[in-house]
Amino acid sequence: MTLLSNSPTVSPFRMLVGGILGMMVAMGFGRFAFTPIIPLMQRDLGINHGLAGELASLNYVGYLAGALLCALWPRILRSSGVNLTALVVSITTTVLMGFSHSPHWWGILRLLAGIASAMLFVVIAIEVSETMVRSNQSRWNSALYGGIGLGIAVSGLCVPIFDHWGGWNAAWIGIGTLSVAVALTGLLVAGKRRGSIAVPDGTPRTPGSLSGITQLAFAYFLEGVGYIVSATFLVTMIAHTPGLEKFAPWSWVAVGLAAAPSTLIWQNLAGRTSVKTALTAAYLLQTCGLLLSIEAHTLFRAGAGAVIFGGTFLGIVSLAMGEGGRRCGTEGRRAAAILTACFGAGQVVGPFVAGRLADSWGGFTLPLVLAGLLVALGALLVATDKGFAPTARPPVPVVKNQELN
View (tube, rainbow, N blue to C red):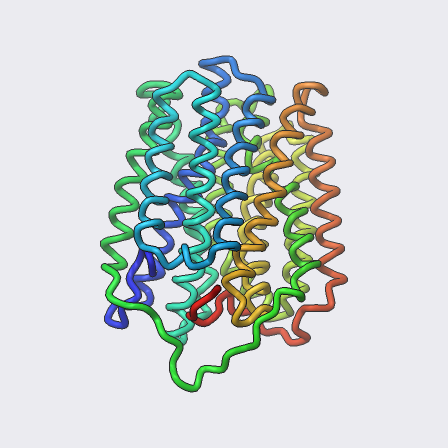
């Protein structure tokens, strides 16, 4: 791909492993490491929930901007220079967070990190999926998103260690340094780019159309608004629960460990039932997890909420992105960028509103109720969407390689 290798001599599974490592860096570290570090910044610097939510929202504004850039200018996805720059920006902005005490600089850094993570997410998802389809290994496509879960789990394990060494600053710098090692490993595993993937002769090309993803995209937007409340504040909520303070960092590890295999599990369920059934079930289960977190005053309930959250959000990402690719055929690259933009727009709203409400209402009860209702509405939209294939065959989250305008 533009970051990994498109060479036919490179094993598709090496490409997959390289993509998984790339997702760890771009999403698990660059994007979601902020979640376990928020309580450290609140402890050491006294920042409130509102500021934390604003910084998270700025990151997602950047994510939305990056996704829109990919949707409006898809040729950028094929530029090795641009995408390598995005990788460098993702890592550099993570490291620099530990060298500033200014909310303004934090906001700029999180904004830039969001742009980089969106571009990396889209290009890695598309290029790895194309490689797997070309090699007739598309059943492994969903494993790619497990890299986000692995990154979350690793950051959850490492942040307390870095915190012990030097507080919140060391946490950011340590995660950034770890990102360098993982990124280099991913590039070495996948190999160097030697050419572009062409569609094999005889491979059918489904006509492209974006009109069929409107309802799916709105459901995905609602998921972006709802899930991001937990994605941003889960560790903070547990850290502020009497008796559960020591469990807070481990809750993020639980999220990551549940998330890593979840994409394969949900894809398997989609294959046994249907994509609509599996996606609806994932939305409804996540709704239950969000509502369960409202009264998570015991270790069991807090742990269950973390596992349910981790076990659903990447499954929804995998199935929704795959379904968009199936419906849009040769317009699948644009569909991936548009769905990512809708998801990103939802994420801009969620943390900002949730943080302000948490400060005003003295806790996260109201934000979690609202998040649960929005995700439940997303489930209803999925269940009534007539665009799903009638068979129990899971979608292929990719389109064939071609020039786009």
